[in-house]
Each structure stands twice: as C-alpha cells, then as structure tokens.
Length: 380
Ligand SMILES: *Cc1c(COP(=O)(O)O)cnc(C)c1O
Image 1 (tube, rainbow, N blue to C red):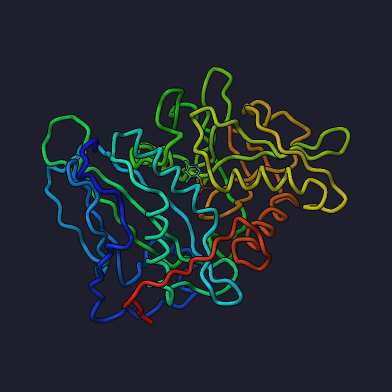
Image 2 (cartoon, rainbow, N blue to C red; image 1 turned 30 degrees about the vertical axis):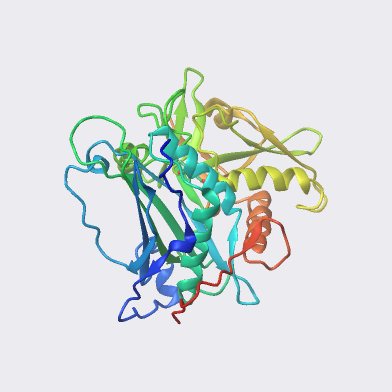
C-alpha cells in the first residue's frame, strides 16, 4: 500500500448492474422478529489488491459470492463488519445515525486483523448510494429501518497463516422491524463465568467475526435454562462486560435521588457501541430534562455481578445496541438465583429520545441526511 499506484476507495468509480426483476417488498409486520433474514435487490462489492489498492465499486443484483475455498476468511476469519441503520424521516428522506462512528470503528476492526485501510468518508458515500438506491426498501414507521451491514473479509488464497492483503468489501441491506416479539418487551440474561467473551489484549473491543461464534454454545446453554442471552463476566472480581451482543447498563438510585446511569469504561474488553456513547452523551447533556423531575448522571466504572445481586440501589438494567436500541433487562440469572427488575423509566426515556433523533422527528446533529445523487441511478 506504500506503492504510488495504490488507489483508495472511490465512490465516483461506482458501476451498476441493475437487477432485472425486483423482489416484492415484505409487509412491515412480517419484518417483526425476523431480523436479518430479508435482503434488498442489490449489493455493493469492491475488491482490494495490495498493489492496485481498491478497485471500482460494483453494485450488482444481490446473490451468492464466488470465492476460492482456500480464501483466508474461511479458515482464519479475518472478517470485520459494521451495523448501522437508515431511517425514513417524516419528510420522506432517508437518514443515518452517527455513521462516522461506524466508519471509524470498521477501520479499527480491520487494522486489528491486518485487513487493508480505506477512506471512511468514501465508504460512507457508498453506503449513502446504496441506501438511496434501495430507498423503497426502508419501511416507514417507528421501530422500522433498513439495516446496513458493511463487511470486509480477507480473500488471500492459500493456507499459510498470514495477513490477507487481498480483501473483499461488500455492503448488504435488510429491512428490519420491531426487535421484541409482541408478547415481550424485556430480555433475560444468564451470567456465565465459565466462558469468557473478551479479555485484556484480546479482540472484544472490535467488531470482528471471530468474536461471535464462541458465544453460540454458551448462548444455547443460557437458552436451555430459559434465558435469552449471556451476561458476560470477566476477572477475579467477576465484573460485567457485556449483555449478549449489547453494551450493558445498570441504573443506581443514590441516596440523594440522583440516578446513576452506569456502564463499563472502554478498557479494550468492551465494544465501543454507538448506542452506548449516545446514551452517555444524552444523559450528560440532558441530565435534568431527559426525565423531568429527576437528575441523571452518566458514570463509567466497572460493575460486579456481586453488586447487581446485592445492591438495593439498583433500579434498572438495560442493553444498548443498534438492533434493539435499548433493551430493558428484567432478569439476570446467577448462581441459581435471579436478579429481577422491571422495565424502568430511564430505559423508556432513552429509547424515546434516541429513536426520535434517529427518525428525524427532531433536529439533531447526530441524524445525517442520506441524500446522494448518482447519475443514471434510480430504481423505484
Ligand atoms: C455491535 C455491538 C454492540 C453495540 O454497538 P452499537 O454501535 O451500539 O450497535 C455492543 N456489543 C457488541 C459485542 C457488539 O458487537
């Protein structure tokens, strides 16, 4: 990549092969509880070569990839991805939520597994092009959005255990509905200390494919015991790191009445969530207005499982992540007992505030207009 011929990602080079037939749109209600199963008509592909750099991005009909079975991504998992959402604002324009944070995080994830660098602003432009192109797929209404999944994977052919400088970047999109089934609004977690999601110096702070499959078997164990997800613990003090694939928050009511909205500091074992950051920033900026009559305080410190079990100040718990935005946690199992809390007022106020910003119902610098005009590109 030191070579002078190396080219960065360039949205102006994008080519398009439109799908000859377009898929029927799913009904919004069919999207509820079917997260990540329906995909739009097109995908964007772009290959990286160590000498030439990034090639021309190609938009093609959505479909299978053809890759050599000895590609690094199938064996050693140099695969990084992102997840962000496009929303349809009341005026009908698509909006993204703080997408610059996703671009920066993808660059860090790629760097951690020695995948090639890319211009984050250029990738964001490609995402805007895809969202504009697939605009008819963005379901209207609160709770609905078009999920955007940019992925980069190492495609070096060969079984040698080494960095992959050849890579494939692709963007796929899926319309998404409500995260929770109709009869349920909260989630339950089993605190496990026999399997560990992330550790100091590891990869837990990055969105890398290799972090997720080791969670499948523990998740099954949790499910067999009646819990939806795992509450991940770490260290001799058994502190909480994350809640399934979400950042974990606990709210403590202090003797002076202040509600401390508390989460782990970003010590490398925690995925730096966009939603996590948004919660902390909103609590700080709107400490007196988010919940009228109550003072909120954002706190970053470690929370131990012992504290969750014993604290009389614990008033609510929730997970934070793009998919659910805010997922109230009603039950945490540990050592044969359950810590139970109702869905709380802080969860509800944060969900309301974040989703109104995402939907563009109020003006806020975090909500980014997604309009791009690609010449000769229009499907709808
Ligand atoms: C993606 C993810 C989150 C949430 O991050 P957001 O940017 O808020 O979506 C939290 N934890 C893990 C492990 C994740 O993969």
